[in-house]
Amino acid sequence: MKKIAAISILAVLFLSFALPILRAEETEAAGTGMSGTPAEFSDMEKTLKQDRSDSLERRIGDLEQANRFMSERVKMLEKSVYDLKDKVDRKF
Image (cartoon, helix red, strand yellow):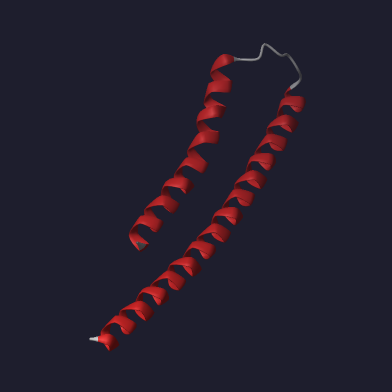
């Protein structure tokens, strides 16, 4: 159970990092046809990098919270299983 949870969390992390990168490459390949000064492009690039890093930090925080919730849920389920096992063992 723990292995499945760990693998799914790693898959979500991978996708959360890979999708924005793939979308950025698609956007660059399409081209926007805009013209501007290098300073404007530099400012836009800084803003986009900051937005991306903020988004990634938020996603990581959400994933950490989900991971903590799932860990607690697994502990509760394990406890329930052990309690049921003890009840069955006591009856026989």
